[in-house]
Image 1 (spheres, rainbow, N blue to C red):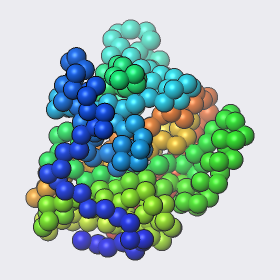
Image 2 (cartoon, helix red, strand yellow):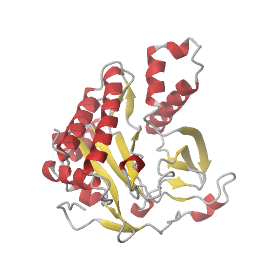
Image 3 (spheres, rainbow, N blue to C red):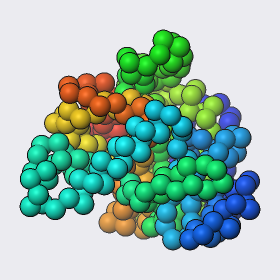
Image 4 (tube, rainbow, N blue to C red):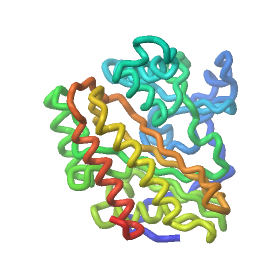
Length: 309
Protein backbone atom coordinates (compact mmCIF):
# COMPACT_ATOMS: atom_id res chain seq x y z
CA UNK A 1 0.00 0.00 0.00
CA UNK A 2 1.33 3.43 -0.94
CA UNK A 3 2.71 5.58 1.83
CA UNK A 4 2.11 9.30 2.24
CA UNK A 5 4.58 11.62 3.86
CA UNK A 6 3.12 13.62 6.68
CA UNK A 7 3.12 14.09 10.44
CA UNK A 8 2.96 11.03 12.63
CA UNK A 9 -0.62 11.62 13.62
CA UNK A 10 -2.63 9.12 11.63
CA UNK A 11 -4.70 6.50 13.39
CA UNK A 12 -5.42 2.79 13.24
CA UNK A 13 -9.02 1.81 13.92
CA UNK A 14 -10.17 -1.75 14.56
CA UNK A 15 -12.85 -3.11 12.24
CA UNK A 16 -14.47 -4.91 15.15
CA UNK A 17 -14.90 -1.82 17.30
CA UNK A 18 -18.43 -0.50 17.57
CA UNK A 19 -18.26 2.86 19.37
CA UNK A 20 -21.38 3.96 21.13
CA UNK A 21 -22.60 7.46 21.80
CA UNK A 22 -21.33 9.11 24.98
CA UNK A 23 -24.99 10.01 25.55
CA UNK A 24 -26.05 6.40 25.31
CA UNK A 25 -29.18 6.59 27.44
CA UNK A 26 -31.39 8.95 25.39
CA UNK A 27 -30.72 7.12 22.12
CA UNK A 28 -31.57 3.67 23.50
CA UNK A 29 -34.97 4.90 24.66
CA UNK A 30 -35.85 6.92 21.56
CA UNK A 31 -39.12 5.49 20.12
CA UNK A 32 -38.63 3.87 16.75
CA UNK A 33 -34.84 4.22 16.80
CA UNK A 34 -33.35 1.73 19.28
CA UNK A 35 -29.66 0.96 19.50
CA UNK A 36 -28.26 4.15 18.00
CA UNK A 37 -24.48 4.41 18.12
CA UNK A 38 -21.89 6.96 17.10
CA UNK A 39 -21.28 6.66 13.37
CA UNK A 40 -18.22 4.35 13.21
CA UNK A 41 -17.18 5.48 9.72
CA UNK A 42 -17.58 9.23 10.15
CA UNK A 43 -14.18 10.62 9.15
CA UNK A 44 -14.73 14.39 9.26
CA UNK A 45 -17.03 17.04 10.69
CA UNK A 46 -18.31 17.11 14.25
CA UNK A 47 -17.09 13.99 16.06
CA UNK A 48 -17.83 12.67 19.54
CA UNK A 49 -14.11 11.97 19.89
CA UNK A 50 -13.45 15.70 19.49
CA UNK A 51 -15.91 16.61 22.23
CA UNK A 52 -18.66 17.55 19.74
CA UNK A 53 -22.16 16.24 19.21
CA UNK A 54 -21.50 13.81 16.38
CA UNK A 55 -23.63 11.81 13.99
CA UNK A 56 -25.41 8.56 14.83
CA UNK A 57 -26.35 5.41 12.94
CA UNK A 58 -28.75 2.55 13.51
CA UNK A 59 -29.00 -1.03 12.29
CA UNK A 60 -31.86 -0.08 9.95
CA UNK A 61 -29.48 1.81 7.65
CA UNK A 62 -30.11 5.40 8.68
CA UNK A 63 -27.61 8.16 9.46
CA UNK A 64 -28.63 10.88 11.92
CA UNK A 65 -26.81 14.17 11.44
CA UNK A 66 -27.20 16.93 14.06
CA UNK A 67 -28.31 20.23 12.59
CA UNK A 68 -26.60 23.48 13.51
CA UNK A 69 -29.05 26.05 14.83
CA UNK A 70 -30.06 29.21 12.95
CA UNK A 71 -29.49 30.00 9.26
CA UNK A 72 -27.17 27.01 8.83
CA UNK A 73 -29.95 24.63 9.82
CA UNK A 74 -32.40 26.42 7.52
CA UNK A 75 -30.05 26.18 4.55
CA UNK A 76 -29.09 22.53 4.98
CA UNK A 77 -32.54 21.29 5.85
CA UNK A 78 -34.08 23.47 3.14
CA UNK A 79 -31.88 22.02 0.41
CA UNK A 80 -32.64 18.43 1.40
CA UNK A 81 -36.36 19.17 1.56
CA UNK A 82 -36.30 20.84 -1.88
CA UNK A 83 -34.43 17.89 -3.42
CA UNK A 84 -36.79 15.39 -1.81
CA UNK A 85 -39.89 17.29 -2.98
CA UNK A 86 -38.62 17.44 -6.57
CA UNK A 87 -37.65 13.78 -6.59
CA UNK A 88 -41.13 12.80 -5.40
CA UNK A 89 -43.05 15.16 -7.71
CA UNK A 90 -45.32 13.59 -10.30
CA UNK A 91 -43.63 13.91 -13.69
CA UNK A 92 -47.00 14.99 -15.18
CA UNK A 93 -47.22 18.01 -12.91
CA UNK A 94 -46.35 21.33 -14.47
CA UNK A 95 -43.93 22.10 -11.63
CA UNK A 96 -41.94 18.96 -12.37
CA UNK A 97 -41.21 20.12 -15.92
CA UNK A 98 -39.47 23.36 -14.95
CA UNK A 99 -35.71 23.63 -15.30
CA UNK A 100 -35.16 24.14 -11.57
CA UNK A 101 -37.25 21.09 -10.63
CA UNK A 102 -35.43 18.99 -13.21
CA UNK A 103 -32.06 20.07 -11.84
CA UNK A 104 -33.14 19.30 -8.29
CA UNK A 105 -34.30 15.84 -9.34
CA UNK A 106 -30.93 15.26 -10.96
CA UNK A 107 -29.23 16.47 -7.77
CA UNK A 108 -31.06 13.77 -5.81
CA UNK A 109 -28.73 11.22 -7.38
CA UNK A 110 -25.74 12.94 -5.80
CA UNK A 111 -26.98 13.51 -2.24
CA UNK A 112 -27.87 11.00 0.49
CA UNK A 113 -31.57 10.15 0.65
CA UNK A 114 -33.43 12.35 3.13
CA UNK A 115 -36.17 11.05 5.45
CA UNK A 116 -37.04 14.14 7.48
CA UNK A 117 -35.97 15.52 10.87
CA UNK A 118 -36.53 14.43 14.45
CA UNK A 119 -35.67 15.51 17.97
CA UNK A 120 -33.49 13.30 20.18
CA UNK A 121 -32.11 14.36 23.52
CA UNK A 122 -32.97 17.99 22.84
CA UNK A 123 -31.04 17.99 19.54
CA UNK A 124 -32.53 18.24 16.05
CA UNK A 125 -31.24 15.55 13.69
CA UNK A 126 -31.71 14.96 9.99
CA UNK A 127 -32.53 11.37 9.18
CA UNK A 128 -30.47 10.42 6.13
CA UNK A 129 -29.38 7.36 4.21
CA UNK A 130 -26.37 5.65 5.81
CA UNK A 131 -24.11 5.61 2.75
CA UNK A 132 -21.73 3.08 4.37
CA UNK A 133 -24.38 0.55 5.39
CA UNK A 134 -24.10 -1.56 2.23
CA UNK A 135 -20.30 -1.94 2.53
CA UNK A 136 -18.45 -4.62 4.45
CA UNK A 137 -15.14 -2.70 4.71
CA UNK A 138 -15.84 0.85 3.52
CA UNK A 139 -12.92 2.99 2.34
CA UNK A 140 -13.80 6.68 2.38
CA UNK A 141 -12.46 10.13 1.62
CA UNK A 142 -14.08 13.49 2.42
CA UNK A 143 -12.93 16.36 0.19
CA UNK A 144 -14.13 19.92 0.70
CA UNK A 145 -14.60 21.69 -2.65
CA UNK A 146 -13.89 25.29 -3.68
CA UNK A 147 -11.17 27.93 -3.65
CA UNK A 148 -13.06 29.76 -0.92
CA UNK A 149 -15.29 28.33 1.80
CA UNK A 150 -17.15 31.53 2.62
CA UNK A 151 -20.09 33.35 1.08
CA UNK A 152 -19.63 37.10 0.49
CA UNK A 153 -22.92 37.69 2.32
CA UNK A 154 -21.53 36.32 5.59
CA UNK A 155 -20.32 38.55 8.44
CA UNK A 156 -16.88 40.14 8.25
CA UNK A 157 -15.80 38.11 11.27
CA UNK A 158 -16.79 34.84 9.60
CA UNK A 159 -15.14 35.78 6.31
CA UNK A 160 -11.89 36.82 7.99
CA UNK A 161 -11.74 33.57 9.94
CA UNK A 162 -12.39 31.47 6.85
CA UNK A 163 -9.82 33.33 4.74
CA UNK A 164 -7.14 32.47 7.28
CA UNK A 165 -8.16 28.80 7.33
CA UNK A 166 -8.33 28.60 3.54
CA UNK A 167 -4.79 29.92 3.25
CA UNK A 168 -3.53 27.33 5.73
CA UNK A 169 -4.65 24.41 3.55
CA UNK A 170 -4.77 23.46 -0.13
CA UNK A 171 -8.16 25.19 -0.46
CA UNK A 172 -6.60 28.44 -1.63
CA UNK A 173 -4.06 26.87 -4.02
CA UNK A 174 -5.85 23.79 -5.37
CA UNK A 175 -9.52 24.53 -4.85
CA UNK A 176 -10.09 21.55 -2.56
CA UNK A 177 -8.78 20.01 0.64
CA UNK A 178 -8.88 16.53 2.15
CA UNK A 179 -10.84 16.62 5.41
CA UNK A 180 -10.76 12.92 6.26
CA UNK A 181 -9.75 9.55 4.87
CA UNK A 182 -10.07 5.89 5.80
CA UNK A 183 -8.57 2.89 3.99
CA UNK A 184 -8.71 -0.80 4.81
CA UNK A 185 -5.70 -2.97 5.72
CA UNK A 186 -6.75 -6.61 5.18
CA UNK A 187 -3.61 -8.12 6.72
CA UNK A 188 -4.34 -6.58 10.10
CA UNK A 189 -8.10 -6.32 9.50
CA UNK A 190 -7.98 -2.68 10.59
CA UNK A 191 -8.54 0.73 9.05
CA UNK A 192 -5.88 3.35 8.60
CA UNK A 193 -7.61 6.66 9.32
CA UNK A 194 -6.16 10.11 8.76
CA UNK A 195 -6.49 12.55 11.64
CA UNK A 196 -7.53 16.18 11.32
CA UNK A 197 -3.94 17.32 11.90
CA UNK A 198 -2.64 14.96 9.22
CA UNK A 199 -5.12 16.33 6.70
CA UNK A 200 -4.33 19.96 7.54
CA UNK A 201 -0.62 19.32 6.99
CA UNK A 202 -1.12 18.18 3.38
CA UNK A 203 0.28 20.51 0.71
CA UNK A 204 -0.02 20.59 -3.07
CA UNK A 205 2.56 17.81 -3.46
CA UNK A 206 1.48 15.48 -0.67
CA UNK A 207 -2.23 15.78 -1.39
CA UNK A 208 -1.76 13.86 -4.65
CA UNK A 209 0.09 11.16 -2.75
CA UNK A 210 -2.81 11.09 -0.29
CA UNK A 211 -5.23 10.55 -3.15
CA UNK A 212 -2.92 7.86 -4.51
CA UNK A 213 -3.05 6.10 -1.16
CA UNK A 214 -6.83 6.27 -1.13
CA UNK A 215 -6.96 4.74 -4.62
CA UNK A 216 -4.43 2.01 -3.77
CA UNK A 217 -6.79 -0.93 -3.18
CA UNK A 218 -5.47 -3.76 -0.94
CA UNK A 219 -6.50 -6.46 -3.43
CA UNK A 220 -3.99 -7.37 -6.13
CA UNK A 221 -6.93 -7.92 -8.46
CA UNK A 222 -8.02 -4.28 -8.21
CA UNK A 223 -5.77 -1.58 -9.65
CA UNK A 224 -5.53 2.09 -8.72
CA UNK A 225 -6.80 2.91 -12.19
CA UNK A 226 -10.06 1.06 -11.47
CA UNK A 227 -10.78 3.39 -8.57
CA UNK A 228 -9.37 6.54 -10.18
CA UNK A 229 -11.32 6.12 -13.41
CA UNK A 230 -14.52 5.40 -11.51
CA UNK A 231 -13.99 8.48 -9.38
CA UNK A 232 -13.18 10.67 -12.39
CA UNK A 233 -16.38 9.53 -14.09
CA UNK A 234 -18.51 10.46 -11.08
CA UNK A 235 -16.75 13.82 -10.73
CA UNK A 236 -17.44 14.56 -14.38
CA UNK A 237 -21.12 13.78 -13.84
CA UNK A 238 -21.24 16.20 -10.91
CA UNK A 239 -19.30 18.80 -12.90
CA UNK A 240 -21.83 18.68 -15.72
CA UNK A 241 -24.69 19.15 -13.28
CA UNK A 242 -22.88 22.01 -11.52
CA UNK A 243 -22.13 23.80 -14.78
CA UNK A 244 -25.81 23.72 -15.72
CA UNK A 245 -27.38 24.70 -12.40
CA UNK A 246 -28.02 28.26 -11.16
CA UNK A 247 -29.84 27.30 -7.97
CA UNK A 248 -27.11 27.25 -5.33
CA UNK A 249 -23.59 28.35 -4.54
CA UNK A 250 -22.01 25.55 -2.54
CA UNK A 251 -19.56 27.01 -0.05
CA UNK A 252 -17.75 24.54 2.22
CA UNK A 253 -19.59 21.53 0.74
CA UNK A 254 -17.78 18.21 0.38
CA UNK A 255 -17.77 15.17 -1.84
CA UNK A 256 -17.76 11.91 0.09
CA UNK A 257 -16.33 8.99 -1.89
CA UNK A 258 -16.67 5.38 -0.75
CA UNK A 259 -15.72 2.01 -2.20
CA UNK A 260 -15.58 -1.58 -0.96
CA UNK A 261 -12.24 -2.33 0.71
CA UNK A 262 -12.87 -6.09 0.67
CA UNK A 263 -13.59 -6.21 -3.08
CA UNK A 264 -11.78 -9.01 -4.90
CA UNK A 265 -12.50 -7.67 -8.40
CA UNK A 266 -13.14 -4.24 -9.97
CA UNK A 267 -16.83 -4.99 -10.47
CA UNK A 268 -17.20 -5.43 -6.69
CA UNK A 269 -15.86 -1.96 -5.79
CA UNK A 270 -19.32 -0.33 -5.80
CA UNK A 271 -17.66 3.09 -5.89
CA UNK A 272 -20.04 5.86 -4.95
CA UNK A 273 -19.81 9.65 -4.62
CA UNK A 274 -22.15 11.83 -2.60
CA UNK A 275 -22.31 15.59 -2.21
CA UNK A 276 -22.73 16.52 1.47
CA UNK A 277 -22.63 19.42 3.96
CA UNK A 278 -25.00 22.20 2.91
CA UNK A 279 -24.93 24.53 5.90
CA UNK A 280 -23.34 27.14 3.62
CA UNK A 281 -25.29 26.41 0.42
CA UNK A 282 -26.76 29.77 -0.57
CA UNK A 283 -29.50 30.42 -3.15
CA UNK A 284 -28.07 31.77 -6.40
CA UNK A 285 -28.92 32.97 -9.90
CA UNK A 286 -25.44 32.65 -11.41
CA UNK A 287 -23.05 29.78 -12.11
CA UNK A 288 -21.12 28.53 -9.08
CA UNK A 289 -17.65 29.10 -10.54
CA UNK A 290 -15.95 28.56 -7.18
CA UNK A 291 -17.43 25.07 -6.82
CA UNK A 292 -17.11 24.10 -10.50
CA UNK A 293 -13.44 25.08 -10.66
CA UNK A 294 -12.73 23.21 -7.43
CA UNK A 295 -14.33 20.05 -8.83
CA UNK A 296 -12.28 20.38 -12.03
CA UNK A 297 -9.09 20.74 -10.00
CA UNK A 298 -9.88 17.64 -7.93
CA UNK A 299 -10.66 15.66 -11.09
CA UNK A 300 -7.38 16.75 -12.70
CA UNK A 301 -5.45 15.76 -9.57
CA UNK A 302 -7.06 12.32 -9.49
CA UNK A 303 -6.26 11.89 -13.18
CA UNK A 304 -2.66 12.79 -12.35
CA UNK A 305 -2.50 9.80 -9.98
CA UNK A 306 -2.65 7.47 -12.97
CA UNK A 307 -0.88 9.80 -15.40
CA UNK A 308 -3.94 11.00 -17.29
CA UNK A 309 -3.87 14.61 -16.12
